[in-house]
Length: 226
Image 1 (cartoon, rainbow, N blue to C red):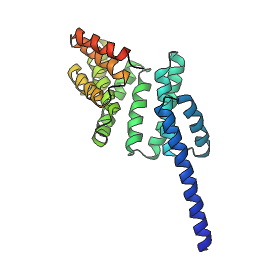
Image 2 (image 1 turned 180 degrees about the vertical axis):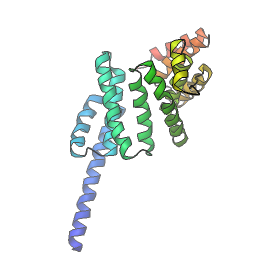
Image 3 (image 1 turned 90 degrees about the vertical axis):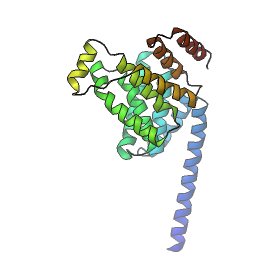
Image 4 (image 1 turned 60 degrees about the vertical axis):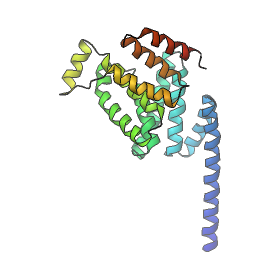
C-alpha cells in the first residue's frame, strides 16, 4: 500500500509539473501576442480539464485579445462572447479568485458594449462593484483602472433618453464623471504605458474636458504603439 501511494503521488506530481510546463509555455505565447497558437493549445487542455480555473481563465484571455485585434465586427463579438462564457464558468467555480474576478469584469465590460443602452446601464453597477473589488486586491493591475475609467466616461456621456432610462431603472442612477474617468485612466497609464486602449479612452476623455491639445498628444502616442 505504501509503495502504491508513493507511486500514485509521484505520478500525480509528474502530471502537475507537466501541466504547469504547458501553462508556462502558453503564457509565453500570450505575452508574445501569439493568441491563435495559444488558443489551440488551451483547447486541447480544456478538452481534458473543462473545469480547470487556470485553463478557463486563459481561454477567456486569448479570446478577449483576439476580439480586441479583430476588425470584423461579427468575429469581434463572437470572440468577446466566448471570452465571457469561459470566464463565467470559472467565476461559477471560484468567484473569489482575484484573476477570475479581474477577467470576469473585463469580459463582461466588453460583452456589454454590444448590448442595448438599457442592458449597459443595468450592468453598470455590477461592473463598478467588481472592478473596485479587484482594485482592492490587485492595486497595481492596470486593466480594472481602465474598466472604471471607461465606466465613468460612458455614464458621463449618457444624455437625453439614455439618462431617463437610468432614472427609471435605479432609485439612485449610477453617475459617471469625466474627471473620475481621467483619474482612473491616468492611473492605468502610469502602471502600463504600452496599452493602446488607454490612450484612446483617455484622449476621448480629454476631448470632453475641452483639452483638445492633450487629447491629440495622447492619440499621437497611441498611434506609434505596436
